[in-house]
Length: 418
Image (cartoon, rainbow, N blue to C red; front, side, top):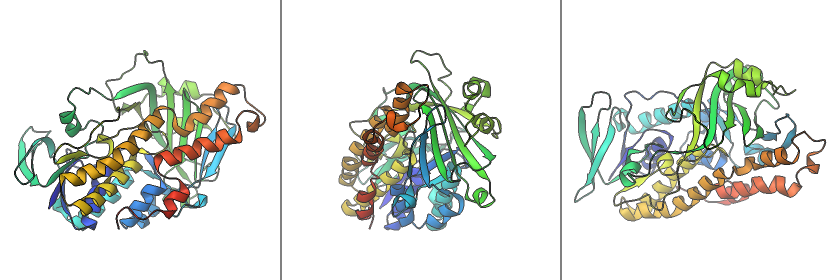
């Protein structure tokens, strides 16, 4: 029994660790020659932290990540709209972690190498195709740098965990086209500065068409009295606006967005200073793909961003990939390395993630900021005069239910993999 995993990102590595946990052999095939700690900050929500805890990784996460204490929404004038405790502070049995994506990837990579062995991850192996055999799958690989063909690999099943530009997904859906841009551009960076608010707060300020998100991501810096602030500056343009859409990940230019945030100097955070003091920034278009009617074809299925790329709203991308890995592992344990296992996994995860993709297109829980901008663009004395208590609490509670991290339901649910 061997599972072939195309893609050594967060979802693919979590799947490898999960399969090893239940005694199923696997190998990971990664396009790049040497995995690098790329990216900026991400959040891991309590339902995903639970799964990483089940894999024995919580001490490593706690050593580098910030245990998020609060999520707070503010208007474009810096006035507080609403806030709520997060993680353990909210009564969950597991924390929420804010962490550098590269650090999370490093933790997973080290765990795979230590537990499965150094030969479990094959680098410079880009999936070039596959064929079903009488007993399973034979996958073909190339070295993308040299063009040379790599040795084939055989297994029972193939899992495409190869990201938003998935070669596996493209094989299933050759006419799908590029990811869908919604008109928003994100500039992302990290800045070492002073802690703000609780020192473990995640904030979102602004509205649908201009927004600033910030949260600390380094426990060592926190222990020194500093903050490594992960930040996202977002502007949304008209759908017909001309932008460098062919560039999916490029160094950002401060002149493109900093003037729009020049007046965002709040008594709790100086946004222009945070942006200017960054080590650098990168520019990303906000993209996703339409939910699919089918993930699994024969002995092959999709996982993580290959299956359900979504807007970075609600802090759900990485967390949903982790949940995919755990549900697929449970299905394989129950049904064996069979097509029936892939279908059982898909039947549970595809509808759940489709709901999140569509909810994020509707602005998710961040819609409260847009309502404030529409109703009180000049500011307000009392938020209660702008939004009802039901609008405030209901928006967040509904999204938690959709995304699978309602506190009471999560705390009382059995482990996915037991």
